[in-house]
Image (cartoon, rainbow over the protein chains, first blue to last red):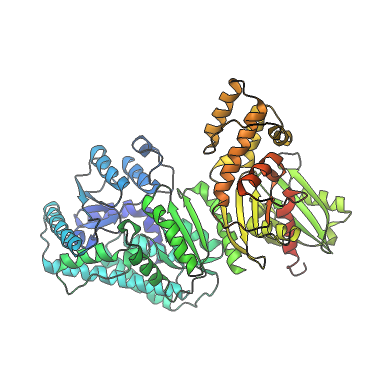
Length: 366
Length: 257
């Protein structure tokens, strides 16, 4: 079952194509944790997260300079190489400068029929939530037009339920990871696959998987680590940590806890509830709310008995790099040694990372 | 019974044979040299110590190529080995600056000698030993003499500290303009020291500061570094074997083979 989830990361294009053929419905590409996928699901379409490949970008170099986010560049590179040609649409949230530039480049250079820019307000306030729910209402109309399906508040509530269930299951796996029943690589595989496959199917697989994992014997081995990352879109880095004798027991990253921490209020008015969860609760550094970030990070580590922290930021990710010194100070203030990486997450960097991670783990073992 | 530590770096292999808290012998062999390989280097060091393999109870390997040492009892990170080696040589060491051929690192030690934190620089060539080596080649001088030549200059010519590629083109234009070799070399050393200082500033510097690695043999660089840090640093008699020494010291903790 975990193999199926892990394979999906690599077979994602084929899987999405098959889903399209089977259901006759549309597939929508999504960037970032700030897009309420529930709306796409409610309109009868399949949201899939856009991911790069751990290979050097070639085509995208003609469009972007070297000093931009390597993750977005690799995603765009994949699109230019035709790997995302099955997409019926793409949603790009306004979260950073590079993604804004990529929105324009995607529209200009690729023939994805629907490319939607989603305005995510910078100010996180009741007015911001109000504004964002209006944005979401317009987003909903455009999705209805694209899919030909109308989204009733009932169907939206159902979507929220399905997504809440998925978040709850992933949260359960997060707790099992703390207990040593699930590895860091496994959980990341679950999150990545959740971003790629129909949620109901994922919920079924997850429930089955968690049952199996609950029967295992807990592994107490490995130095317990917290990982904060700007973007790790495959499991290689976690695999490296585990190969070096570390055990990720808590995380703060888009392909980790940020995707499933906090539920959408199923009782409230759906658009407002979505706006609230995605704007106020998804705690990424882009939102410039340090206190909320720190509180969230402390929450991710609760009960995890973390011994050290690894921060992995992509080169030129301004939001994360700006936050890094403050985050480091906060973690060190809690008595946690910090190991910092800033890179492109390429194969070539891995050996140097291995050296540092091994040294860090040796240091923590004392 | 003796212990061996082996450090397989990106340019050299060094081996230290330790017995009863004493360095019996050591050997440094260039990876480019004929017949250079880990086992052969241990052979050479054993020969110098007048011992056979039978006298060695444990071998610990470190360095970027440590996984190639199949006869090692244990592998350990460069950070831990550099720290152990430096502390053995200088018991008051609280900071270790290790300047290798390809990468440099700074290690902060606690009062009880444990590694508290460390930072590595292996992305940029501008602060590395290989950069100095390629600049020496460019200027037609040997690595061994470049430091002495730089010390002879009264003033230094400005060289960019940010990028090895730009620094190289700057050096070429200085040479073409007829600037004295010594002045260009002095500027180069200053630039490399700047780069190292960027790295060093990532940890809290506490004395004593020990500088290890092949680059520590360059007197001009040490002078620049001391001037920038505003303190005198401790230099091991042979800075290139500190990693291997640390590995041999870790072998002390091993159960007998």
